Image (cartoon, rainbow, N blue to C red):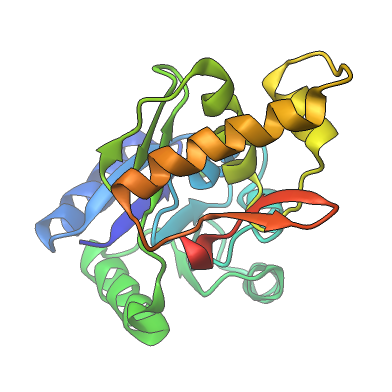
Length: 222
Ligand code: CA
C-alpha cells in the first residue's frame, strides 16, 4: 500500500486526512514540522507527501525546496491562502499539486490517487528503514544485526543516495580516528556489511565501490 506522509501542524486537519486516506487503503505518517519531514523522508521515503505551507518551523515552500535536493517524491501542497502567487510559486518549487483549505477529504484522496497513478509503479519501494533511536536498520523488511560502526557507516551512506563518500569521510562519520590502517579498516567494515546485506538479498549490491574514490549507496542497485 502506498505510504503517504502528512506534514500539517493542525491536528484537526491532519486527522481528517488520515481518516480519509486510511479509509482508502493508504498507510499514513503524520508530522507537524518541516525539518522532521525532511529527516523522515531521508530515512523512510514515503510515496507521496502532503505538505502544509504554514508550518511552525520552516515553511512548506522551504521544506519542498530542501526536499528536492535529494528526493523526487510527489508533493501536494495544502494552503490556507487561495492566491495565484502561491499556486505558481508552489509549482515552480517542484510541487505536483495544490489544494486550498478548506478542502474536501474526498478531493484530496482522489488527487493523491491521480498523482500516484500518473507516476506509475516506478515509485521506488522502501528498501531500507532506519530507526535512529533503536539504532536499527531494516533491509527489505528484515532487521539487520549490525555493529555500531556498521550501523553508522550504512546510515551515512543511506542519508545521501548516490553520493560518493571517500574513506576519510566515512571514517569521520563512523567516529574512528584516522590512522595508518584506516583504509583497510573501512574496507573491512564495508565487506562485512555487504555480507550481511547479501544474506538478505544475494543478487543486490546497494553499496557500490568507486575505484580510487570510495563508496556510495545506489538505490537502483538495492
Ligand atoms: Ca499550518
